[in-house]
Image (cartoon, rainbow, N blue to C red):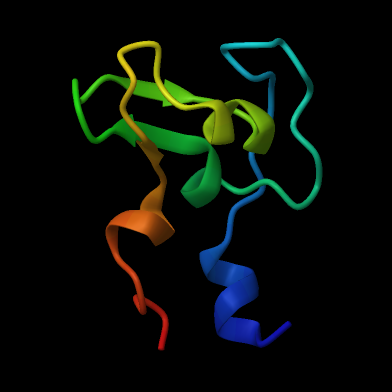
Length: 72
């Protein structure tokens, strides 16, 4: 991994607010801190719960979804 990415990506600690799963070493603050594009509710979720979406029917967007091409 390039040096600038390793200092930019911070591994998430703790558990998913939805299912309680422990975060893994590939889950970062940028990918787990999400916001619903419909109701704007903010959550900290694992990849599986992010894919399921928000209970309001909206999509859960992480930093990469909201800022495509951010590191390029």
